[in-house]
Image (cartoon, rainbow, N blue to C red; front, top):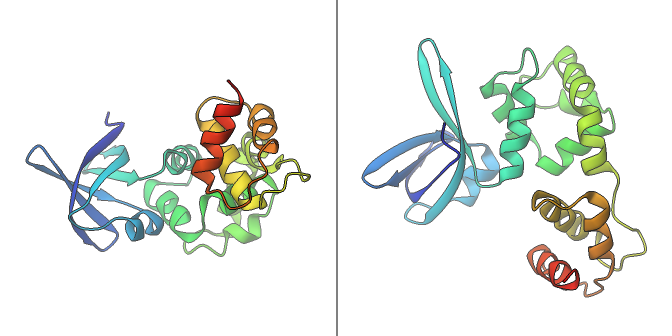
Length: 193
């Protein structure tokens, strides 16, 4: 129902934030990474998911669309609810989570509070093929960029609609190791014109 909400952060507590927009305060449950990034009084754009149950309506949110996408994939799995999915996203960075799943490392998932062995195995079984191509193909190792920066830039380019191959090829042309992932993305897009 809601794709995202923009507004000012007016409150933060217990893993929730309040975003005020046009006189309405939306209470949104966020993972720890999002919670830590947001400051009271600052503007923010929060990608959201409205969970509707018989007795409750709750908003879940993230500052990164990739986290929302992963959340939606997680809750599509039988036995994984919104709170567990948000807990998983709080328990490890999204890239690490995706790599654990794509490599079949269910044991790493069980280190997240609330995820048992069977749930971890189910997550790996149902999401592994979907995530392997996106996260595990890697970036050309001959590239001079540090792999974490290059990988982040590849994921950003993929979110803009490029395939992994197109994104990796564009980034392989960049050799400035001091650039931020954002600058790498801009440079890669510029090189494709």
